[in-house]
View 1 (cartoon, rainbow, N blue to C red):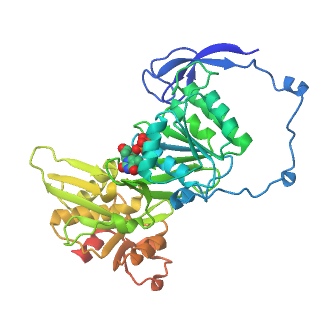
View 2: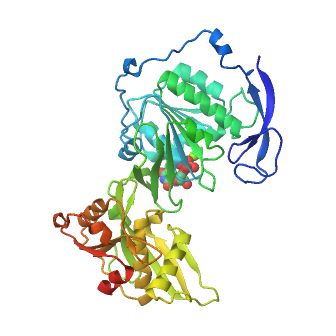
Length: 454
Ligand code: TYD
Ligand code: MG
C-alpha cells in the first residue's frame, strides 16, 4: 500500500527534513525549505523480499554478455570529444549552463544535424514556432527532427511510444512535471522524479537522452546535486554571455575522460566549433604594448595560449581598486602581495585591472607567471616582446613552481610561432630541450625572469 506523506526539502541542496527549518543544516542557506508531497512505499526489510520472486540473479562477470555498443557520431567534433567519442546508446547526459549561454541553440543544432537518426526535441520553454524560428536561423535542414512542446512526462512518454525516436532531447528538466508527484515543476522532488523516469526510459530502451538544466548563480545545477549523481555524463557550458566564446567542460563522464574540453564561438547562425582556439584567443595586434603577456595554459587536455592584459596606474581616489576578469580575484591579490614583498614593487597605491582576453575563465595555476609579468610590464611601462610566453605557478615566496604537462605547453607555443618560453627550473629537469626549436628559459625565482626581460 502506498502512503502519501509530506516532507520538507531544501531547494538549494536537496536535504530533507521532517519539519520546516529556517536555516538548512546541510548547506547553510536560509529560507530554502519547501513542503513537498512524497509517496512512500511501505518499508520492507531485506529478508522479507526473499519471499517474493527474484527476477535478477547475480552473474559471474566473465559470463555477462557484452557487445561493443555502437556510438552515434555527431558532426560536431567538439561534442564528440567531450562525450568521450560520440553519443553512447542509453546514456543520460545533462547539459548545464547559465540562462542565455546557448544550451538550447547547441542542442537544437545537434538535433538537426543528426540527419540519419530520428530525433525528438521536447521543449517546455519554447513553442514549436519559436523552435522553428531558431532552426531557420541555424540554417540546417533535417527531415528527421521532430519538435514537441510538452511538460508532462507521461504525455512525453506517450508521444515517444508513437514516434519511437533514436535520440531524445529535453529542454529543460526544470520545466517538466510528473503526475506521480504533487509539487510544482522545478522543485526538488519533481526534478528528481522526472529525471528518474527519463533514466529508466533511457536504460530500458537504449535511447540516448540529453537533458538541459539551468544553473544557479553559484554555478551549481539548479536544485539538486542529486541530479548529477543520477546521470551518466554532466557537461557544463560556460563563458561570458556577452562574449563570443563558450567552453563545454565534462565534469562527470561514465564513458570517457573528464579532462576533455570543447570550444565554440557563438555566431549569428548558431555555435561554430573552434578547432584552433589559441590562434583566435591571441588578439592580433600591430604595436607592442606594455601590460600584455601570453600564458601557455592547459584547459582539460587542451593547451591554450591566452593573452593576459593588465593596467596598473596610480589610484586617484583613496583606496586603490583591484579588479580582475577571467582570473580569480583572491589569487590576484595574493600575486600582488608577492610582487610587493618579494619583488619590492610599490603596488600599494596603484589601481590594478586584470583581464583575460576572450572572456574565458582560467583556473590553471600555470598562468600565474604570465599574470605577474603582465603586471610588472604595465607598472614599469616596458613592453614584453610578442614572441615571448610564460608557463609557471608562482608561490608565496616568489618562487616559480613546476606545472604539469610542460612538453605539451611548449609544443603548442612552438606551433604558434613563439620564440621564447619561460618555465620553472624544476620543470626543465628531465626535459629533452633538444627536440624544441623555441628557446626555453628556466628560472627558479620571479626576479630572474624579469632581470632577463627588462
Ligand atoms: P539560448 O540557446 O536560448 O540559451 P539557453 O538555452 O542556454 O538559455 O540562446 C543563447 C543566446 O545566443 C541568445 O541570447 C541569442 C544568441 N544566439 C546567437 O547569437 N546566434 C544564434 O544563431 C542563436 C540561435 C542565438
Ligand atoms: Mg534555452
